[in-house]
Amino acid sequence: MKPLATRPSGFALVVTLSLMILIALLSVGLLSLATISLRTAGASSSTAEARANARLALMMAVGQLQKVAGQDQRVTASAGLGGSTTNSRWVGVWRTTVQEDGSEPVVDWSPDDTGLMDARVSQR
Picture (tube, rainbow, N blue to C red):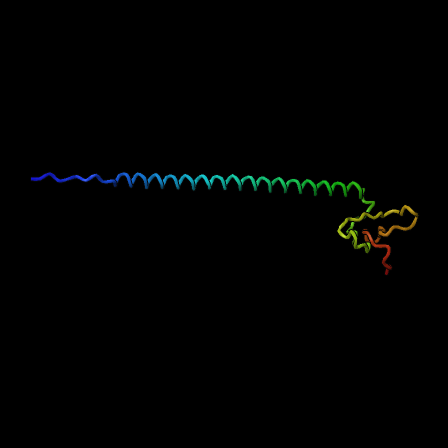
């Protein structure tokens, strides 16, 4: 009997290299996923900060408007109400008491219906 000849095979080497490539691809994928997650977290943090700044600016604007308008002595409305189209998005403040020039106010208090009325409109 003749002994069987054993040929050196490279199967173990091929399997090992394949597994190493698979592990390398998996690690690159996980690394890119972590990078994307960090970018998303940074973007959402910036968005939250921008919303907080906008909310603060709105609260400051409302506070300034309340400070200027006073305690039920003035009326606020869109500045376009007065006919000005230049700054129609601004907020106008009108007195409900006597004007500075001594004339009647544009907006007057109506004791009958306990509300404000436009003095420029004819009364019925």
